[in-house]
Amino acid sequence: MLNLRTVKTLAIASAIAVGAATGALAFPEKPIEYIIPFGPGGESDISARFQQPFFKEKFGQDLVVSYKPGGGGAVGWAQLNSMNADGYTIMGINLPHIVIQPAQKDVGYTTDDINAFYMFHYTPDAIVVTADSPYKTLEDFVADAKANPGSVTMSGSGKATANHLAQIRFDKMAGINTTYVPFKGTGASTTANLGNQVKAQWGYTTVGAAQGDAVRMLAVAMEERHPLFPDVPTFKELGYDMVGGAYRGMAVPKDTPEDIVKALSEAFGEVNADEAFRQQMLDGGFALLDVGIDEMDAFMEARKAEYIEAATEAGLLN
Image (cartoon, rainbow, N blue to C red):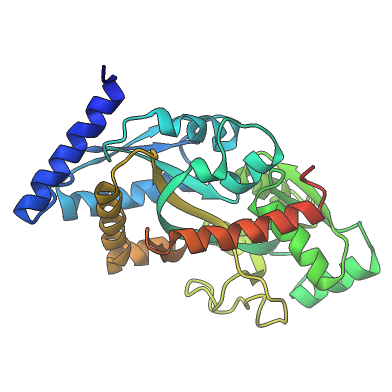
């Protein structure tokens, strides 16, 4: 006897076969539920809202954003593979979260359980200080950290997050010892920095975009300078081979047929290629990324190796 999930999978396969016979895959034919595994208002939500009108314009269907917060995203990711695998349910994913969480403990899913089909942007790491900070340059910051080991406190969003791993990596590169102070989210971390509870912040270029003249970024973790901040150097310019941040993309349940997965990847690739969308993202402080299904395995393997090495060295993994 066939169970309901098997029947659904066969129905999807049949639809694909019909599409293949006619030379076209009719997808999407209805709205797509876009689940954000965090609460509303964060960068995952903001970027999904940016995508909505462009997807509607190009494909005539709505992206219906909903939320399933909990466990820093783990609650949603643990449930992803039990959801409908018809292509009409997708979920936002974040790196390094989906690598570090299951490496630390049992969170109900593994990294390999996540069927990622597109990575569309990242928020580049940045060292952020207040506008009146004595640190005018990255050199000033490093000099103080070397002269006073452990005394330079830095806020960041959570433990074992992109911010935390950036602090670990940069301390090693610069030969310094700073003190990382985790807060619950970028907003709280920024508030701590603005309130002079810490000397600096491991934040993102999005913090610079949101806070404007209230803050100064000392360096950004990009290959080239962010167009919104042409006066802010990259870490690479200053001699530190550091590029990265919090990466965001989308995944579907593992049983989703390959043709549907590819169609989704191509659809969001088309949204990502739209110049108006790209400009909106850049204006928000994001950096664009274009990793589709064909490049996903290599991209994920590289990120996994990088994150596991940094987290292991820092004693964040058993």
